[in-house]
Amino acid sequence: MLSSEQFREESRLELPTSHRIPLTWLTEHGGPAVRYRTLAELAPAGAVNPETLAEALRNLILSAEVSAVTTRQADDGLWGSNYLAFQPSERDEIDEVGTVAQYRRLVQLGVPNTTRPFRLADRMLFRTLSRDDDPNLLGEFADLAEADPRGTEAFRNLIREGACAALAEAGHDADPRLRGSAHKILSSVSAFLRSPLAEDPFIKKGGGFQLHPEATPPTWWSLAMIAAMPSLQRERAGFLDRLGQYLAQPAPDRSYMAAIGGHTMKPIHVLLGDPIELDPKQKGMPKDVPLALHYVELLAGIGIAQVLAAPNAAMGFSRLLEDVDAHGIWHPKNLRSQPKPATPLTYHCWPLALDDGELASRQADITFRLACIAKRLGWHLEYS
Figure 1: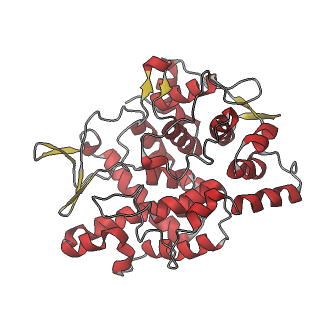
Figure 2: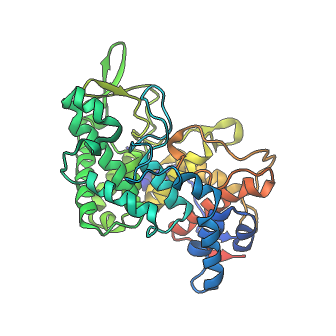
Figure 3: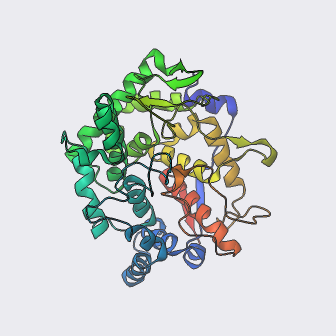
């Protein structure tokens, strides 16, 4: 398994150390979320008039993107009476996107965590971190757990991972309830990374493959959680190095399922290596641009070594940067439409605004994301 330093030496891939952020262009061409987050997060300290920022926030709160999420929240704080659904599923009798994804969507849109939708959801999400046996805290898994109690704890653990990611991204990283749950999750992943299951996490079942029932690999949720908890990163430095090496490996080219009790599910939340696929016909452009940006942004939240340790992610990121012009605007040739996601994993973060038919709207989300990643990586920032 290559360390991040060995990968960098062998691939000779050198990422930039500086980036230009087109503040004026982003505020003129981005949707309400991009405009507000550009002013609030990317602009230099003291550069934005408070009245300008307040107006941008007001427009965001009243936007169609925010309303599409908040109007679907129930009085108990949940969305769709479920926690983890990335999308509706007729097979699983799930009618809409779940609480964790919708909550994270509001975070990505830039909605302040002091607003009512967060306050309502926080009560339920924090309860899932406790040992509360209330069946309502099992959400979409309640009937399955009742039918086969063997899976109850595994379902609870899944929900806790999603809840931890959401709460950490919303800024609750110092809360002792979250920190306690986060350490338990990382200890479980760490045990997996040290075990033989890290090399071969599958068992044969019914002519196919299943994830070993004792395997606890990293997930998109646990990665998001640790990316949003800098203090946890400092406390688990050795774990981060092992995680970076594990995610540098190519993901298995194999279809598999996961079994919990008597229920089987497609575990799209699981990470078994670098999940980014590159398109050789497009000179190494990621096949799923939204997923690549999301993954690199999470890795950037952990540090430059982890970005470089994931070969496909690093090369795909480098390829995206090649299309950034001198003004900091992502400007590829023949951009006929906004890049489409190939998985519901990025529902919460892509797109921040829909394609309105204008070229600039197709560029704005990626221009903004690349700027966010550059800032997270600690690059020297220039502004225009």
